[in-house]
Amino acid sequence: MIFDNKGHIYSKVEYNNEEEIESVVINNFNKLFGDYSFLLEKSLISTNSGKGTIPDGIIIDFQENTWYILEVELGRHGTWDHIAPQISKQITAMENIETKNKITENCIKQIDKNKLFKDVLSEIDIQEINIHGTINKILQKSPEIAIPIDFIPNDLNDWKKTLKVKVNVWVIEKYKDIEGNLLYNIPDLEIEKDEPSKEDDKFSFDEAYKLAIEKGLLKIGQKLHFEYTARGKNKARFEGIVAQNGIDVNGEIANPRIAALRCIQKVNPKRTSSKGWKKWKTEDEKYIYEIYEKIVKMCQS
View (spheres, rainbow, N blue to C red):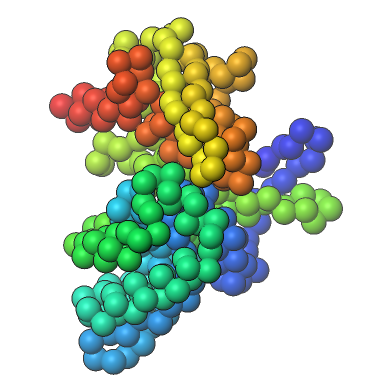
């Protein structure tokens, strides 16, 4: 159950159909992939044999130089009867150079119509003249698979281990109150893309933050900062302080992502996400993401 600040009780319920969960993901894709990501919806991908398959989208992440085949699913459809054959066909299609050229062409056409997104890209020093070349460079890599789903069938994790490409699975839950109001639980952007598991020693950034304090890599009261420049505005500098449960900015404590996003929205209210571990820096100009990587290595050794 989930309680809101008005005392309403929301209980977990099933999606009516695949179109509903697909709509939730498409309308909120920035919360999963970040504001520097571009969604190309319902792109036709043809396999080498000429047989077509249509994923729910292609995602180009310009900040992480990664691209994804997006396939939104319902767990009840089954891994072997539906999910695995469909995605396997799409992975095969990505080997086709003509397919990649189509993706590039369609992305350029859509971005040309989107001045706001071109302004967003300028924040990470990707100017309009460089967009085409950047997309081509990203598409030279193998795609990752992104599967937002309502629950994870047991054999889905078994299947994804057989693939050579990385498969990311996010659980998108639906909640409803007695009056019919809906809430959707979308995973935090900065939780590891793969579900945390003891098997591969992965854990969330929130868990890493607590471990960083326990091991002295972050210290209570330590000062952090980052700078942000929105197109057409002067560079803004934001400061925070390491607290037990997050980063304290002017008396408000939140995890690194939310703390950074609140700062950024003071300059650019249209921003909806921020990879806070790759924003905040220590006084010696090191990103706190480097601390996260140290925690992972310490736990794996």
